[in-house]
Length: 224
Image (cartoon, rainbow, N blue to C red):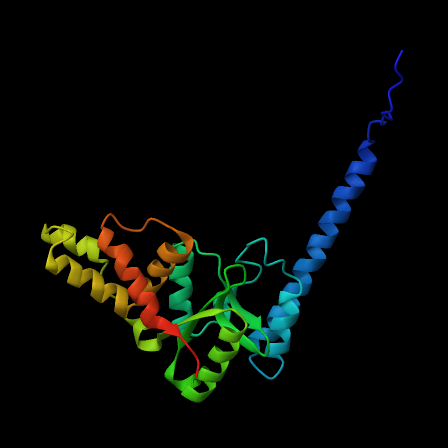
């Protein structure tokens, strides 16, 4: 008779299972408390903020996407908040305030190495932006920039307008409506990123796919 090499395992005791569950729960509570303490420092917006952001990301596994370890909206500028709303509406996995070298990207996907930068006039200079773009480009990141004015611009979804007017999607007027929306709003940029980089089907019109590539080419930052 063949003798089995398998070692029989005793059933786990309920006390052992409960102890493991409680230990895991305790660790999660402690982690949540640590993140909240770090985030409270970030909210002060003083010289401790950048160090706190780095400390926060040390507690996050960015390979497992959860965009809500903290309430990011409390530290966003108005234009970042507009972009974040579109990112979440399109279910795109971008991390806010993501550290890259000595810089912090407004939004970044570290797996695809894509950055979205929202350029408010009061906080940006061309020379500094070029330097950071060059650094990110040199390290394999693709950076898309959008102005604060375009982040704040609100245009009605072109397909709603097309439907309201009862016109064909591929007629010149429809194409103009789609182009204006795609090239001049944060909605259009995020939709273009969703289609090109995440293969999300966004439109019934083939024209949209071609135009999305043009949008990204126009928004692409190339550094010096």
